[in-house]
Amino acid sequence: MAVTIRGKTLPLPILQGGMGVGISLDGLAGAVAACGGMGTLSTALCGFQEPDFAKRPFEANLRALDRQVRHAKVLAHGAGLIAVNAMVATTQYADSVRTALRAGADAIVCGAGLPKELPALASEVSDSDAAIAPIVSSGRAAGLLCKLWDRHYGRIPDFLILEGPEAGGHLGFSRQDLDAPPSLSDLLREVLTAIAPFRDKAGRDIPVFVAGGVKNGADMARYMKEGAAGAQFATRFIATAECDASEGYKQRLLAAKADDITLVKSPVGMPGRALRSPLIRRVEAGTQPSPERCVKCIVTCDGKNAPYCISKALIAARNGDWENGLFFCGAAGGEVNTLSTVPEQMAQIMDEWRAAQ
Image (tube, rainbow, N blue to C red; front, side):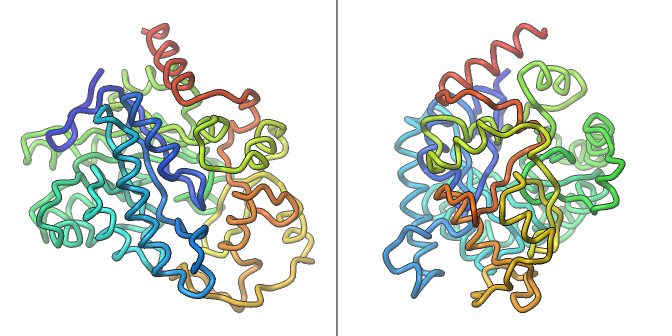
C-alpha cells in the first residue's frame, strides 16, 4: 500500500490535488500529510492575503509560499509528504519552484503546460532532493516528457499524475475532446505503455497516480488493479474543516447539484470545470465587463481580450463571493454534500479501498 517516491515513503497512496487560489495552502496540505498522504499547496497567487499584495504581488506570493511550505511541513509531523503545485503557465513559475525547493518541499508537481525544464530548475537548489512530477493527460505527453528529461538532463519523473477529463479546474483536453472524452482506464493504459521503456532503462518504477474522475476508494482500488500506484483527490477535500477555502466556498459546493457544474472558457486559454456562478452566467450571456487591469500573472492570458480576470475571480471565490467568483470543482462535485474533516476523508477513502479488495 505504501509508495516509495525518490527514496521517501508515502504511507498511503493518496494525493490531495493542488487547488488555487487559496483553496489548498498550508492548512489543508499539512492536514493531509499528517494522515499519511501527500498534501499539496498551490502556488497560484498564494500571497493574496499579504498586506502588500496589491502593490507588490510577485514579492508577496514568494514570501507567502516560503512561509506556507515550512508551516505545512510542521503540521505534517513527518508522517506524509508535502508537495507544491506550480502551474507552468504562470509568470512566476520558475521562481515559485525555486522558492518551494528552498523551503523544503518534498515534491514539485507541474501542470497547465509541459514542464520541459523542471529538472534544470530542480538542480539549481543543490541541497534539495525533492521529487519532480508532471501532470499529464495522455500517454503521448508522458512519453514526450520522459524522452526530453532523459535526453537533456539524464532524469525521468519520480512519479506522474494522470489527470482525466472529469477533473475540476483547468483541463488538459480540448473542448472537442471533452464532447467525447476518453476513459481514465484507457488513458492509464496509454501512459503505462509510454513510460515503460524509461522505467526499464532507469531500473525503477515511475508511480502513476490517477486523478479527475476518481470518486472514492473503490475507484482507487480499481485503478490500482489496472496499474496505478494510487489516486489524487481534490474536490472532496474542499468540504473539510481544514481546507483553506472560506466557509462561503464550502457551502456553495455542498449545495451544488450535478447540473450546477459546467465547462467554462478560461482566460488562460484552456477549458475548465466550475460551478455555474453568476459570473459564468454573465460570461455565457456576453454581459460580463472586460477586466480593468491586468498584471500578467498568467503567460497565456491576454488581459485586453479576456472574458474576465481569472485572478480576481478565483480570489472572489475563495472568499465566498458567489456573484463574482470562479468556483472550480470536479465533475462529481454534486455528490459532495457533507462537511467533514481531513482525517475522516482519509479514513473513508481507505475503508472504501479495503472493501473493494
